[in-house]
Length: 410
Ligand code: PMP
Image 1 (tube, protein in one colour):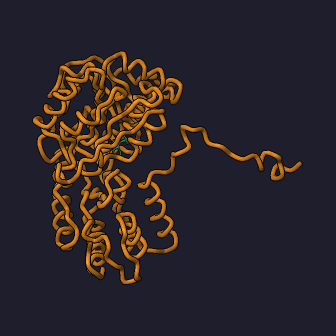
Image 2 (image 1 turned 180 degrees about the vertical axis):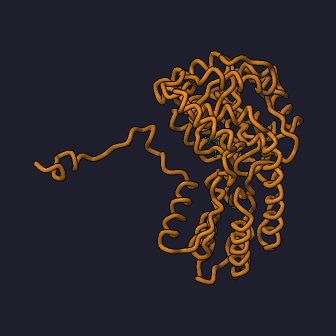
Image 3 (image 1 turned 135 degrees about the vertical axis):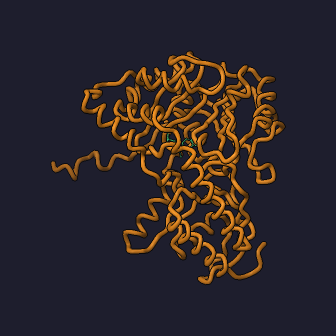
């Protein structure tokens, strides 16, 4: 029997329940659609990806070469190289920790997955202030938990208000997942806002808090970690960070979690069955990035800040897009509410943020991500982690798209 007519070909495929609802994220889908249109010869400006356009520091690349040459080519310790764990521990915000409080994973994303897989029993809830990074909900669901999205509208600065946190906590709540500066809104919690949330958490000792600080070095206001503001909560806190955004090392896939040793042990046990630990050579590069010249952080932040100001001004100048100034990260998250209900020259009524973003891509060749992907419709996310030329081209197209719309907005 030939392979092609094997009886296996007709066996219906069924996904496990934990994978049933998982699809490629909207962000990946938009990137793929952009690539498809580009392959057809269309001129596409992609402003959809959360990836710095800077190069990885040369000393990190050199450290990787050296690591490979010197034989760092065997299985790494599951929780990470001792030297990297120690360097991360030495830089931990808030109360002092040792290397045993650090888990190194294949990107911050895997840290999040390890934390959820290691702690959630079926149906346990994770509070996600929305808008939030689209992977949070999927990771929680994949781990068997229930994602509880709490809307944080623009009027609240896209930030979780203490009373909203208190109202969302139930007997099944296991985690609050906080991200400052935020993807996609750029909202950044100051010491006062964090202290107010910590006060609510003190009344709920069963609830753990995960503080995703991956955009720490891309904050345009002074950055403060929840672990510094509320050291008394460190015993039920996981701080997540990594080299992807700060050092332009997205492809090296190194992130880490800092938390109580019992949690780190549980996450290490899960990681041991999934990857056996992050790539040793990439860990050596991450260590070099942490220990090398840190001046690039400030320089790159200044470049991003200038881009942010340009982008905000250009979007607001369209007259129909309302773009607040983000305090951190490299995204703007403007409202497209005043565009909804308007008609494109092709005759399509733009019913929602998805329709607006689809039209921007199909009719004008510029890729941005609808707010719905982050749990807050009526907005879109534009990444300004691109060169000035790319940004100019994209902003020009958006302005043209908006000015071509007809009708009366809702
Ligand atoms: N957290 C947030 C909020 C992010 O935006 C991202 C990347 N888009 C990550 C975590 C994951 O980062 P890493 O590349 O280290 O997996």
